[in-house]
Length: 166
Image (cartoon, rainbow, N blue to C red; front, top):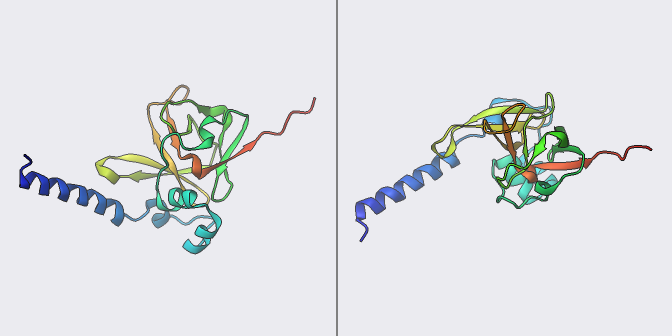
């Protein structure tokens, strides 16, 4: 039988974690000015519900739910909020995590913010032009960088490379 004090302490801990998530300001949006800034209503009108939740509310998609996870054509992955090119297909790899992963972004494409949600320290990645949340970067990726940019696929759009003229 569960002791009442353990049950209450567990419930209080879960509520505390939820409160930290709810109370934290979006670091990327609160601390920086971006080239593209829109009202919340404008973002909601432009984005799908999934894109809005991820890009503007720092949400995440279910692992394996993005069609971009299985995208293997040559091309560019861009921000779904402002279409800024972010990652080349040349740097995409299968990480086995359920999210599109890259070992390196394009130059001057992303910004980084410290993320302390859920009692852990992570590095959040956002679009440098519109501030949209893209995912996180970890240091368990492949060579040559050793980094894994674990991106939410719904925060990205894919632009296939033009067929080469032969």
